[in-house]
Amino acid sequence: MKFLFITLLISRFVSAEVTGQGEVAFESRFFDNDGSDRTQDIGYGMFSRVEASYKEGVSNHSLRAFARVDKKDNGRDLFVVEDLNASWYLGENEQYSVLFGYKLFNWTATEAFHPADVINSRNLDSDLERLEKKGELTAEFDFLLDDGTISFYYFPRFEEPIYPSSKSRLGASIVPDDPEVIDSGNIEGSNWIPQFGVRLAQTHEGTDFSLHALYHVDRNKPLIGTKDYFVLAGNVLPNNSSKFTSSPTPYYFKVFQLGGTFQKSFESILIKFEGAHRAYQGKTPILTFNGLRNPSDHTEAAISSEYTFNWEGGFDTTFIAEATSIFGVDKEERAELSVFQRDFLFAIRHVFNDVMGKEIFLSLVSDMERDNERFYNFSYSQRLTDTWKIKTGIRVYDAPQKESIAKGLEVLDNDNSINFTLSRFF
Image (cartoon, rainbow, N blue to C red; front, side, top):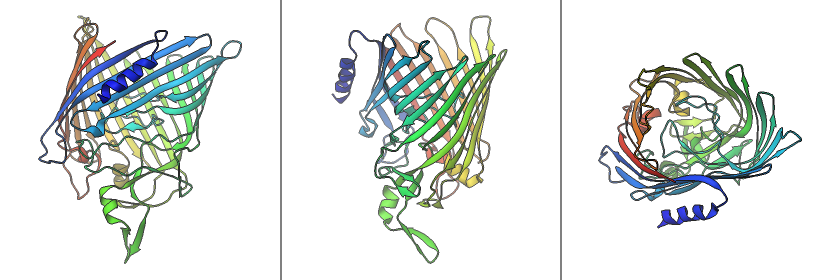
């Protein structure tokens, strides 16, 4: 009932004058039995997404939102606005534009590692290499250049990420407390926090590149623990140990970030790069499960190479090699900052180019620094008719825990799953 109500609510918003499209899907996922009664090894439910746009004169209006209801884990029930904005072109040649509302940003160039794509908060109970995003409340001013755009941004609000429930196999069996934002060493009492950015995107002689500068809340690398602690005989201990253990607080910090992306094609080979340097503002120590930690300034980069082979039968096979690393911190800090802290991906995408749109994707992510940390992914998709489509896949995590506290992919070790989605588009 909840799912139907949300779907009808979105459909009511989309009037007959608006052009758009939508999707309703049945989703299921089946995990290896972990022997625990606290987690759900089977999940199934409904998913719906609606997209709509309306253009009149110099104004554009966009809506994109999705909802999910899970029968086994109501912690996965959600309604997320991705885009809900209005924009206007200005100037004699419409070389300027302004936008207000929620917006989904895509600043990445690579397949699985995305150091530059940091604006939107994520749903952490989704595919690790391609997490679902929430829209970001934005005021944007764009100036069109000869071969690109320079954009200025104001983000008035910190959108909180969505954490997995205690039942989810993709979580850590605990549900964090409400997030806190730390600015200049002090906890902000509200999510209404001014943040700013500027980005240059340019295309020149077959090369696409972008540069950005951001002063915002880092949504991707929080410190999880407590700010409420004391020191006893050289040991740092939480004042509330039960809360620290069962519902620690995610602390998010203001950061100044410089970064960019690069793409260039050399005949059948496509080279991609993206990176970002982060300098945290107003650092303050947080007691985490790994001890007392301060946010660490660091640089993150990813490089990718893609080669596409065209078969005589009309098939296309793309081979993808990609690597990422975090610099400026030691091995232990890297493992705490990201699951993909120094990893390599090899993937194959085979597209049949037939009327049913059949596609096969296989990938392997392997840690180059930490032993025995690998992630395998296989998926197959195709249309059944003009309006129906299926997608199925297998995800395998092989990362045995090495120390008393799991790090990186170890948190997902043996959370292997089979996934199936049946979608109808309208």
